[in-house]
Length: 65
Image 1 (cartoon, rainbow, N blue to C red):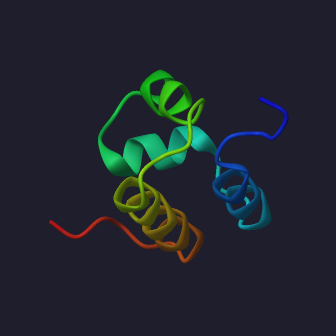
Image 2 (cartoon, helix red, strand yellow):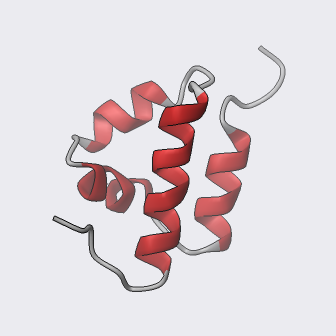
């Protein structure tokens, strides 16, 4: 494992000044669960949900009910 798994997600979060715990809260999961998920490359569906969460958090948005 030479590359960092899910580097694109980690970089996007850093660029938007969004912490992983904030993403986890938005998704309704524990931050430790998110960290474990990020250890291995995620399926596109999960990645899309995380990217959406990052953009929403960065724009001050809240999750739609």
